[in-house]
Image (cartoon, rainbow, N blue to C red; front, side):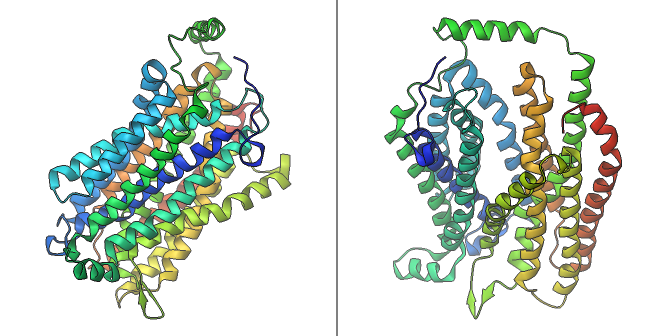
Length: 461
């Protein structure tokens, strides 16, 4: 289908990109704002307004929730392709997410679980399909596409950075609790104000998406059953090519995706500790004050996206400068595992020091910095390598498989976080040390396998 070149938006991009930028910014605001306080709310005693879960139960719920968010992207994409179209799927997903946050803002255990389910379903509809909408703004060979996704990616991290600051302040700050008490509200209900703020963010995203909804009238229809004969012919040809058997070369390249999938699971199991065990370490074993002013422990969750915003252009510039001399994709994976392993090695002395009292915030700031170097090395490389290695007729399936790695890793990470015990700092040193050793060992194994993996990849780097 032929599209007119739209240069009416930011920096000569389609004007729809601006709308999707802010929709995703506010959706990520709602997700990361809620996630920043989720496990802390579950383990807080009822006298402090929390649910009073033990750490194992809270970590299990957290892991199941984060796993489900990734898993729902698969049926969410399928439903959009077959029935709704990406435009309607994004709209419905945003509405369902907003309803989920409203439920979390009400003090009820059943509504708490119902809210998590609604957010999971809504995110499954919105998350994969809003990215597809971004791609649909550009023609097939539009050279602005990569830059457009870079702008979109910045919106994700901007929302993720802002959310814990606002939602964490409302949920945990003694200053805000004093305001609630003076206004006649229960100060222990501050958690639900944090959840409510996350919901307000999603409503803002939904409102501006609806305001500019006409910008997407020409894109985002369902893939199957359209009346356009040209598109139907393309789909028929595509469906026929699926029916082709994979060639030996394609099988070799797909095997690389599954090899890297395994290492991505290992990476995710450790890096996902940021929202669980490291969040608990920040809350219970870290000094959260600057010059006598105490800040919410959930603010540490803003550090991760801020580091991504800082590091992404630096790494991108580095690869651009190196050109063909830059490391291969499996080598970049190995480096990412190395940096995350080094990050968790820092948690060993930090945990030992916590045995004598709360430790400096600089320990966690250093851990997150090293971890996000690894994330910036792995995440874009992973998405890129799947698109390069997967046969075109299986690109969607293989991308779904790739997101499955995050789902598996999230569930395992939640299970492991259940062993967190702030009263046994020696065990915590062993716990984080074990994670570090696993990562460093995985980095070494992958480095040794890299020459063989490159041969399987053929000419793809």
